[in-house]
Length: 213
Image 1 (cartoon, rainbow, N blue to C red):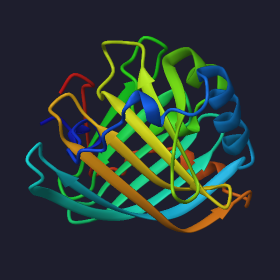
Image 2: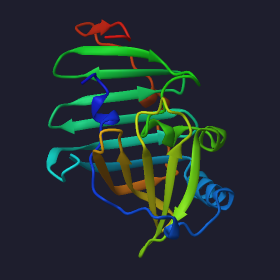
Image 3: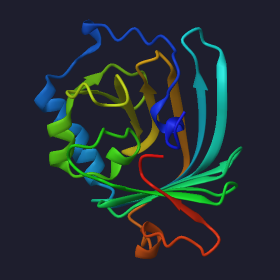
Image 4: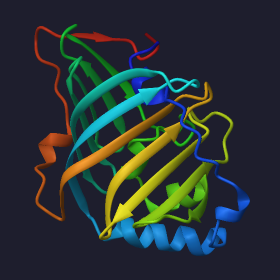
């Protein structure tokens, strides 16, 4: 698994996303989801992640926090079990493995594989360009299904769930039929977030690896 494998490999729980569950046409669903995302110029939350394999066996648990300043600013911190930080200003992605004292720098380009977490910091045009978007029936809140057009994406589908107009859950299914569920709590929106949180300068004792490693 590479250094961003935990973002690219996700667990399986059958959700039975039948056609009958889609209640909005694609354009209407995309417009509604975009309106919800645009309510939050900035977003800060803690998260808990669980990952299951295709048989429903628990593979991993993790927790941390996420900070977003749209468009482009994104910081994802895994606190436990293995500390790792992903930071981007929308142009460059840094992946910092704290315990290993290693960092990798990657350029973010339109041709790069779509990352399910980083897409949250993207622009409206990014979302409508890269995904087929539909709305699903949900007993509470509002849930959207995003399916990437590109076969190069690192996942099959993504769900975003909103309650009280705030993003509170993300589910991702990868091409190994593994599903990851991210539950967000202590959500704060539209608060000042220092720009330096979305920049990274490697400490002197950190090895910077080539992006292909």
